[in-house]
Amino acid sequence: MATESFAEAIAEAERIIREAPHIRTEQDLAEGLDYLAGSIKASLHLAWAYEREYPYFVASTGPYSKLGLDNPDTLYFHSYIRDDAEYVVTGRRGSTADLSFQVMNGDYSPASSPDSLTAFDDRELEIAPDGTYEVRFGPAKADAGPNYFTLAPGAAMLIAREVYSDWANEKRGEIRIHRADTLGTAPPAATERLSAKRFRTAGRILVSRIKTFLAFPEWHYLDLPVNTLTEPRSTPGGLTTQFSSVGHYDLADDQAMVITVPAPAKDVAPYFGFQLGSLWYVSLDYINHQTSLTADQARVDPDGMIRYVVSERDPGLANWIECTGHRRGFLQFRWQRLSRALSPEEGPRAEVVPFDELPKLLPHHEGQQVTPQEWADRIAVRQTAVARRMLG
Image (tube, one colour):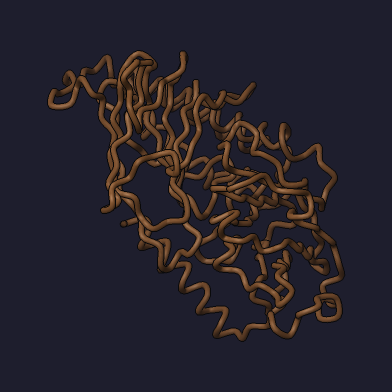
C-alpha cells in the first residue's frame, strides 16, 4: 500500500508526542495531539511541494500547522531549490513592517540546524515605484547586475518572511517563484511510484519535525535560568538584521512576570514583537487571546517603556500577555530590520511579583487599565486582522 509507511510514521509521531517529558496535564496532551494534526497536514503539503524544477512558495507554518515557535506577526513561505539552477522571484512589496529572504543549505533535523547561506531584507533590493520587484537567485555570473544573489554550494531552500507590526492597517504583498529555464513547460505526470515515494517522504518529514522541535528548546532555551531573559543578540542561524531575546517561564497562579523594555525607535527597529510559546515550541493561540504584542499594539508608558504583564489571571491592563492555562512556556522578543546592533540596555528586564501587588508595583498602572469592553475590542481586532491576512 502506498500509504503504509505514512501510517506507520503517524503512529510513531503519536508515540513521541505521548512520551514527551513536559506533559503534566490533559491540556498538555490535547495540545500535543493538535500539534500532531497540524504536523500531519504540513508534512503531506511539504512532500508534494518538493519541486525544485517547478518550484512554488508554500506556507512554512501558520495558525493550524505550527512549528518552531512561529512568530504570530509573520507570514512564512519557502520553496525548494538547487544550487546549479537559476530562480526568479517576482512580487509586489506590501506595506508590512519587513520583507526578508534567506537561503538555507537544508532543513532542520533532530541533531542540528541548517546553515544560513544568505540572508537580507528588501533594503538590498531595487524596487520599482509601484512596489513591484524581480529578484534572481542562481550560480555565480560576472554580469549578474542588481537584484541577483549567488547561490552558495549546497543551497537547498529559499525562505521569505513578511512581517506585520500594525495588524489592522498594513497590507500584504505578493510573491511568486519560478525556475528560469522551466517557465512555460510542464512537469511529468504523476505516477503510482512517485506518489508512494512522496508518502514515504511525508512520513520522514513528520517524524523528523516532531523530534527536532522537541529537541530545539534544549539547544537554545532550557539551559537558561527560569524566569529570565537573555540580552538582545543576533538570532542564531537567522537573519543578519534580526536580534532576539529569549527565555522560559514558570509562574504560579498568584504570580505575574513584569517585563520592562524600552520602546524602540522606528528608525532603529521598524519591527519589534514579543510572544509566548508552549512547551511544544509553538505559539499560543494569538488569534483569540492576546498572547503576543508588537510595538504598534502595545501601550507605551509616559517614560518610553513598554511594561508587559505575563500572567494567568486578568490584571485588567492593556499589555496583559495571557498564559491561557500554560504555567510554563517560552518567552521570545524579536527586533527586525535593524539599522544597528542593540545594546544590553535596550533589552528586556524581567521580574516575578505577586499578582495582587501589581497596582503598587507598576509605575503607570492607572494609565494601563482597560475595561472589559475595551479588551473585547482588542481581541476582535486580532481576530479580524488574522482572517484578512490569511486571505490577502
